[in-house]
Amino acid sequence: MNPVLVQVASRVRAVLPSRADFAVMGRDPRRDLLAGLTVAIVALPLALGFGVSSGLGAEAGLATAVVAGALAALLGGSNLQVSGPTGAMTVVLVPIVAQYGPGGVLTVGMMAGVLLVGLALLRAGRYMSYVPAPVVEGFTLGIACVIGLQQIPNALGVEKPEGEKVVLVAWQAVVEFVAHPNWTAIALSAGVAAVMLLGARWRPTIPFSIVAVIAATVLAQVFDLRGAAPIGDLPSGLPAPSLSFLDVSAFGSLLAPAVAVAALAALESLLSATVADGMTVGQKHDPDKELFGQGIANLAAPLFGGVPATAAIARTAVNVRTGASSRLAALTHAAVLAVIVFAAAPLVEKIPLAALAGVLLATSIRMVEVGSLRAMAKATRSDAAVLVLTAVATLALDLVYAVIIGLVVAGFLALRAVAAQARMDQVDFRPDLPGEHSDEEHALLAEHIVAYRIDGPLFFAGAHRFLLELSEVADVRVVILRMSRVTTMDATGALVLKDAVEKLNRRGIAVMTSGIRPGQRQVLESVGALALLQHEGREYATTPEAIAGARKHLEQAGLLPHRPHHHGHRIRKAPR
Image: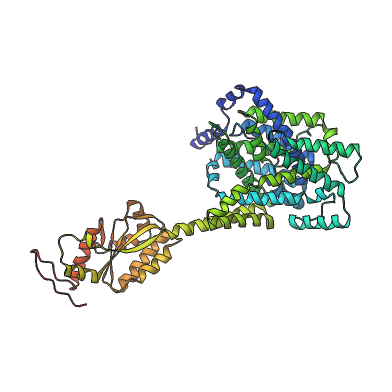
């Protein structure tokens, strides 16, 4: 068989769930079923709210929670993960809806699913762990602010103003509310948010979100509250699968949004799985399987009118806290929501939009981990700067640009910190002098030879500072570079070293090196620096050998007399 096909088949088998992944589902089904029911109760108002916020309606949120939730649970790489529509994804989807319409969002979801499957087959899951913590905390804070601002129009009971910038839209909604106040809507949203936040402190195990939403719906119906606009008509069941929304001609223009959605789905899902692992003992997710499961979920959800999905940290945390131990809990969550879609649509569609806005406002507040933010701010100035910059960029631009900016700035600051570790220190070479030497001879050698030890990395971020230091060496005849402590070297560092040696040679200063590591020889050789360092045999294994070579060079230049073989010979200082 073709070796390429064999490798592809091996990669596919590696990301598919194994029998062991499903074997644990029968260990404690009662606890898993109860956990799944609890998560479904928590997820219902969130699914409705995020569906409304995305611009595709509450039915899209429910379809996503059912279809994506079930497939990601079956095919993902975590036993505890719960997937569905999330606030972070909503933040990305709103501008896509505004620009391309509902069909564009569904197409983007399928394209993102393909990209996620590709990332899984390329085994890219492990690389997501390299995202710095300040970037994660920064965009989580930014997302929380955006989600909260997105709820302002519904919380105030006004029509959502046109626009993509969430801050401006929220401000326009406030202006409209001041002109035409709707106290019913604001009372419902504030009441639901207060019940959720205070209830979570009092009894964390009780799903106060559904309690508050039911209470708000009953109040709106019993007292016929004006200004409490309901969700509206919901289909009594999932729509039949359809590809009618696909527009092949738009694939090119939708590629960038699809990449953004795939990147967010990968990042948030793997972050959620890591959080779930940390909350339990003995659980460990497979990142590539998780990407595969999320990819299949995002391929399927748009067929039923669902928006792009990702793992949900809040729902996953509820799942773990209520005792879930296998995928059965997440599957139960999807099944319960499916029953609600088919059996309780007439009741669900009476829920006031203001009540859902209150749920999401409380959710956005609970997303902000004050302790984590305080820890990041106190860690280093660089961490604090990356966190703040990422959060502000999320508000001012969008989430994907914010993450890219955060990664670039974090990478730059990290490189600067690593480059600052590189040092070139002048060292006393006299302890390494071979044989016995008088004080006068020591002084004579020190007049013509200077030795430097290079510590740390010699690469592009700090190499030019090294060149400046080395090029300004005082008027001596030999420079010895001790390189055994160079930790890493790239082509830029090798070129800078070559340039410095050439400048010293032009000034009549010979450069001797010692301790070049085997791993650095290839880099030096590739840019021609090794040949320059080996010129006239000036590369040595040890520092004493380099010093002996330096003395020999001075003797040949007539700056030192040949060292006598007997002791006690007085050495006269050679003229400069």
